[in-house]
Length: 321
Ligand SMILES: O=C(O)CCC(=O)C(=O)O
Ligand SMILES: [Fe+2]
Image (cartoon, rainbow, N blue to C red):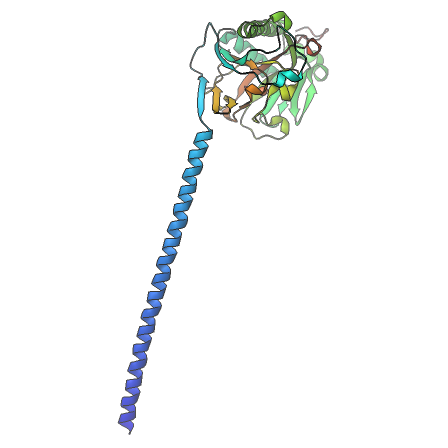
């Protein structure tokens, strides 16, 4: 009996082993199936991620079609380069001043109105003025008309705060140069848009700006938001920008961007370059973030409304520069 039992036991063992092997095989087959299904799933996820990324890239390219209107290296002189655009209806909401209120709208750039030497003198003026204080964030302004100067997270009035000290910072010649340049810009805007320069007035704010890549600390530092000058500043009818430094060598980023329905159009700053445009929503724009270096510019703005006219900046009486 015992050998039979043994045989039986042996037979049972063999059957069990066979079963185990089969189960093992089945398990292995199952897990390899599961493994390959996982692989397929992963592949699908990767493919759809690639697809989404490509789609995002293509659509971002599409909405980011950028045309350079004027590059830093070009010299646009003696005549401005003019791009006409249709006027928005913004001006209908304001009193019309014939001979000044925009009827022709557009944008233009000229390197023939302010010399590079003049731009350098104005840049030094800006450097000295802004060295008195400046924003903690990346964007500082100095408004010689109101006296507003960025200081830390706010503004001070330089004429009150620094008083007599200013005679070592600004000279009468500096203010004379500002007036001269302002007058020439006014002339070229009037010529380009067919206006009577005598019916255009300097308006506020009109300011020097200094921008670097330091992170913004307050909303005042956030210069890069798209905006419409007429909406932001109210009184503006024509905006001009006089650049005091060069895109690409003094700073990177910081190009001026007109944001049109069908794409972006940029102006690359160049010292002495004047860019001007009608201030309504036909000229929605922004400034790219400055990524390196320091960018200096002056915003010189004009209104047609004599009630919003301001006088040229001048050193207050008693401060003799
Ligand atoms: O500095 C610039 O290029 C533009 C500044 C600007 O948009 C503004 O002052 O309203
Ligand atoms: Fe602006």
